[in-house]
Length: 158
Image (cartoon, rainbow, N blue to C red; front, side, top):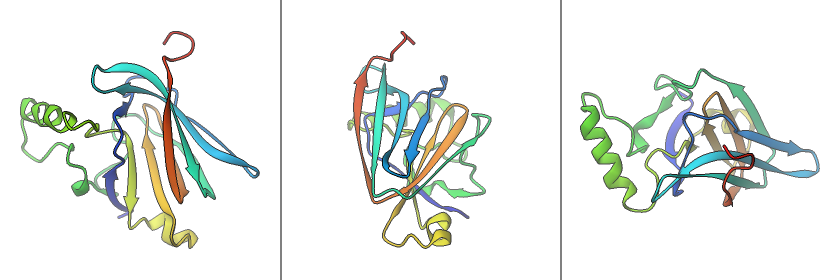
């Protein structure tokens, strides 16, 4: 098991239907992820920028978009918005709406991996593992923390 997922409290969800997840990292520059997101409360599309503090590790990996963080590798018990076994879709959607009414998205597509196997493997004590589950790729970053901001409507009229 790679660790327990916990949603990062943000008022948006990475767009599940569009690509655009981009990692920028280098030896002498900050680690940044940009992405398209659906934002609460009105579901408008915006480009977001997430900046990582004290990052030393980052990677990008492709996936098919259906299961970027499989339950056999990640413990989803820390994600209140995840569909529960046997839960009817209508009940799940209603529960997500109730959770979103609090101002944070229940399934943001950005999670912290608690008790991360990757953090242990690289010996990065005191740092945190974040993972973005995008449309066709995922981005993992080990860092001290993060900040984010909206860049406004997507460039290019997406």
